[in-house]
Length: 389
Ligand code: NAD
Ligand code: MG
Image 1: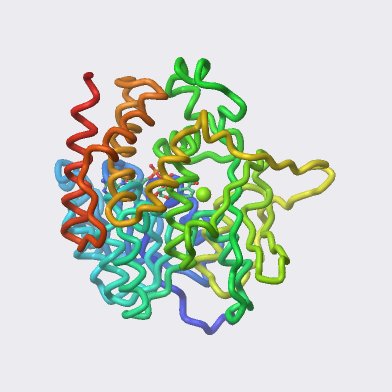
Image 2 (image 1 turned 90 degrees about the vertical axis):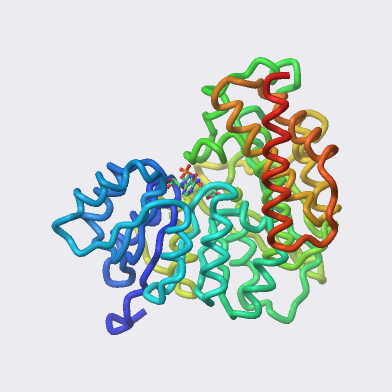
C-alpha cells in the first residue's frame, strides 16, 4: 500500500479481548495503514477507556449498562460517542464510517452485530467463529448478496484462505484442519475426570480467552472450526479432515484435485492472521519472530482420539445433520464451558451436557434467523437445567 492510500477504518468488536488487543497491537504498529473507528467491550471499562484515549475512535460501546456513566465521564473531554448495551452493538455496526469490522466478540453474542455488518456490505475480519457455527447459511448467503467480504481470522481458516489465493478455478478435494490437541493430548478419561479449570486454561501453544482455551482442551474448538470451514469454503462434511499436529506450525492445509497439498506455516501468533485479514490482499512487513526449522527439527502428526475427546464426534454429527443442530451444539457448549469455568461441573460433564441437549431439542432442517435464536435460547435453558443434576 502506498503512503497516499486512505487509511482503512477498523471497527473492533470485542476490543478488550485476546483478539481485540492483538488487533490494536497491529494497528499501533501500522499507523499509516489503519485507524480505529469503533471499539466495544462487555465489562472491562478500564481497558476500554485506555484504548479509547489512545486510539481516539468515533464511538465506543460498553455492553454492561451499569458501567456507562464511568466510561462517559472518563471520555467527556473527547468527542468520542459512548453507547451502552447489547442493542448499541447493532446500532454502531450500522454506521457507514468504517471499512472493516474485526469481529472479536466471543460466542453467540457476536452473531447479531456481525450479521449487521454483513447486511451493510462491510468487510468482516472474522474471529468470532460461533457466528458461522450458529447461522452460517444465513450469514454466507447475506454476504454473497451484499458483496460483503468475509476474511477469516481464525488461524486455521486464515491458512486455508491463504492457500486458496490464486486458485479460484481449482476445486478443493479436501481441507486438513490441524489441531494442537490442547493441554490434555494423550490423556484418557480417567485423567480428564479430575481436571480443573486452572489445568484446562493452560494451552501449550496459544494464549487466548478463557472460552476458546477450554474449547481447545475439550477439542470442541476443532469441532466448531469444522463447521466454520464448511461455511467459509463451501465444503461438504466429508471434505473436512482433522489431524493433530502438536507443534502448531502448519496452521492448516488444502488438498487440490491433483492430489497436491498446500500448507501455510509459521509460528503460532494470532497477530499474523489478524494482520493478514486487516491488510488483505497485502502482506505487510513486520518484526514478528520468525520460524526456524532448527528449533523445530520434527513436525509430527497423529489421528485425533475421538473416543476420549467425544466433542469432536458430537460436532461432526452436528456438521452432518446441519439445520439447527450446530446452533444447539454451540449453545449447550457455551453453558457447559461457563459452568466448568465456575467449577460447577467437571471436565467430562461438558460433553455429556452437549450430547443430552442435542438429543433433547427438536431438529429443524431449514431454520430462519428467529428459529436459530429460539433454538439457542431453548438449548441454553435445557443445558442449564442439567447443571445441578
Ligand atoms: P476474549 O474472552 O479474550 O474476549 C472477548 C471479547 O468479547 C472481549 O472484548 C469482551 O468484552 C467481549 N464480550 C464478551 N462477551 C460479550 C457479550 N456478551 N457481548 C458483547 N461483547 C462481549 O475472547 P478471545 O479469545 O479474544 O476470542 C474472541 C473470538 O475469537 C472467539 O469467538 C474465539 O473463538 C475467536 N478466536 C480467538 C482466538 C484467540 O487466539 N484468542 C483464536 C481464534 C479464534
Ligand atoms: Mg483456530
